[in-house]
Structures are given as structure tokens and as C-alpha cells.
Image (cartoon, rainbow, N blue to C red; front, side):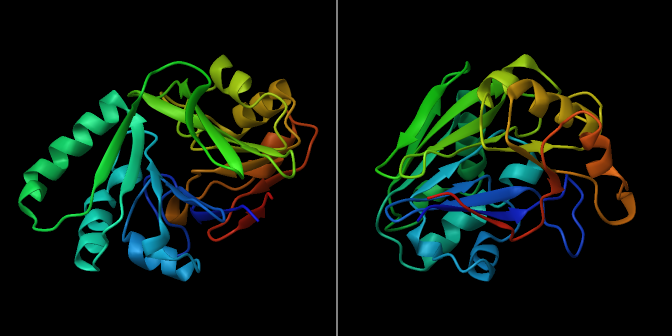
Length: 252
């Protein structure tokens, strides 16, 4: 049965209870990490996910609070003896910079390194990312400070669907991407350049006709802003909740 595990829910400044926003989709055939921060080995272990079982990595955009763990992920896989390929998906803008970053570590000189396959996605809407027997994933461009994508996931056995906004201002592209989904996971950093408030997340969920709304990428620790759920509820008629680290959605 496919499930999505939230590995982190904080915006760029995490605290002891909230890691930077990232998540993992676990199926029978594929395990897909969505963004990669902190120390992936430890975070996945705590979530009960086989680190070496990762098949795919999707990077939404090239900001440190979303990609800082990539060098550790690749190095730890190599040191732990991985031999099978890892697929990495992202926009040209993102993957070009990931390759540049790894070049500073001279990863081409690491002996017996396992295959890494880059899949560069075009900007636009409803771009096919990957598909397997259990689910399909597509990407759509969103409105952030740099090129970024949100994701939509369709689960074949249950007919359920889920969308993740990624970091974005309120925009029609997210509404289109999330149209009719059962679950919308939407950022709530605050209404500013490249980001959305909880109220804007609620408006987007209502316009998209989403079944439920989970707020993510919200301020934590000393920057915690109370009342985010109530703020979103003023604009969305469905259930609203704050996503929490290690929250699990069963989607099969």
C-alpha cells in the first residue's frame, strides 16, 4: 500500500520538533524522496524507511532548505555500498546547480560510484515525472523566487489524489494542479514574495475543490505564528490541519 510520510514541516528555520519541509512516498516498487535536507540517512531511519531502498529523488527547487542534504545522501549511499541506480528529477535550473555543487566535491573521482540518472523536467503544467503500477507523479511550475515545481500524485488502486504546492505565492497554477484532489498539502510561510499565507492556502484549496487541506512549511520555534488553521478555515470549507513531522497518509 502506498503511503506518504512527512519528514519535515518547518519553513527555512527549523526547530527541535520540526525539520525543514520534505517527505517520502513509499510504495511496493518505488520509494520516492521529495526534497532532501539535513541528514537523510537518519531521518529516513526514524521514519522506518529503508534508506537503501530509495529509487527516486524529486527536487522541487534549488534553495538550501530543500536540497542541502543531497551531497550527504549521495555520499552515504556510496559509502554504504549502493550499486543500483538512483533517479533524480528536477527542472534544468535545479539539476544544473546540483551537478555543479557535486562537482565541488569532486564526486566524479569517487571510486566505484553507483549510477545517478538525471531527468530534467521542462517548466509548465502537468509534466509527467514518473509512473509505476501503484501511482503516477506529475509536476507543475509554481510562483517562487526561483524556478520551482509543485507535485500531483495519483494513486491507481484507491483512485485518490494528492497535491503538494511546494514554496509558492498564491497562483492559478497551483489551483489547476490541485483541481479535485483529495488532499492538498500547501505551504503557509506567510504572505510575502514567493510564499503564501494560511489564508491564501485556504483560498487556493477552495478554488481547487480540494477535499482537505494540510498546512506545511510554516514558521516554527521562536517564529511560530498561532492561529494558522483558523486563518485557513475562514476561506476553505473542508477539513484543515497543520502537517506534523512523521505524519503518514495511507493512499493505496
